[in-house]
Image (tube, rainbow, N blue to C red; front, side, top):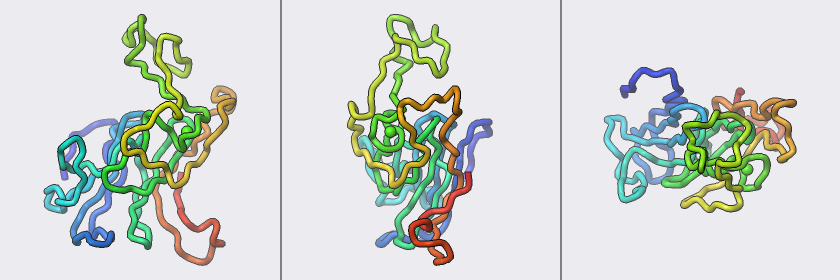
Amino acid sequence: MRAAATTARIFSRFYCGADPRAGAADGRATFGRSTGAGTRARSSRVNVDGSIPADNPVLNGVRSHVFSYGHRNPQGLAFGPDGRLYESEHGQDTDDEVNRIEAGRNYGWPLIAGYKDDQYYTYANWSASAPTPCSSLDYGRNIPSTVPQTKESGREPRGFHAAVETFFTVPSTHDTRALGNATAALAGLDVYTSSAIPAGARRFSSPA
Ligand SMILES: [Ca+2]
């Protein structure tokens, strides 16, 4: 597979091999894709010869390599012993996520970070700033009053699928300037099945 050279994080994780999900044929490749922190990323699924699997989801009338969307910064990718595909991703300042990836589902970003709980994160649509245009604004943590903001509870993204787990979720009173980002930035992901660690702590393993 070829990709243009860039300084952004394009392919964060790549899985190539048999797709263990029931009913799927061998020889599928699945990978998480990110075009840089803060952008709208997708997970993709292609056959090893580059063709589009016949059972990939149809989104907006098109069956393509896109398998799921609404990801922020995908990092880890692992199949569990149940044959389900799990993914980890970085939150912006809070709310790292572990998601169970299902065909055609929307994992919320940028409208929702972590759970749909209205804690800390508010979607700010900088491009819709009025009357001051976005091009005249300095992007940063201070959101100008001209930028429309929407709470998570005010949105119902089509096909939304909540995270399996979120990490480093903080209350809205969290002071990022004083305390720093809450996220530890989950990186790779493995599903842990050994009995060496007590049952309650052995579902996932992820470096950060
Ligand atoms: Ca949230």
